[in-house]
Length: 193
Image (cartoon, rainbow, N blue to C red):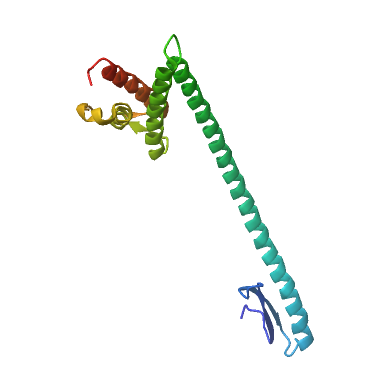
């Protein structure tokens, strides 16, 4: 009572290319023995076309998702390229400043070259420290320690570091490293180390 009388029934699965059942086509009729082999063959062909349509829709959705993911990756890549470009320009500005400071005045060329090399070593130590920290932040203690080690060499053991654990932004860490290098160079030059 309340249901359609079904005396003939035809069910055909809708299968993807991989064989996964995606759904089915179901037919019922009130009369008995209505569906024939020809009906089954026709409905099977329709089910195959439905499976192709569903597979194509899934492929389209996956392709759209992949395209969107590629756009995000390309955007992230462009951001990284821009950041790298910015950092290279900043580093080149620092190197230019170090060169101008090292080669100014009547400093003999050999002394100027040594001074410039030492300053580059201090800059390199700061960059190595920041690279280990993914260029996010560097601790003041690590920055000072790296600069002292790069400048004072064996005499670095004579330097005692103490203070709170302060985190520095990358550009600040580079500036502090160069300043510590200059202080260590003066300490070596004038006998404090």
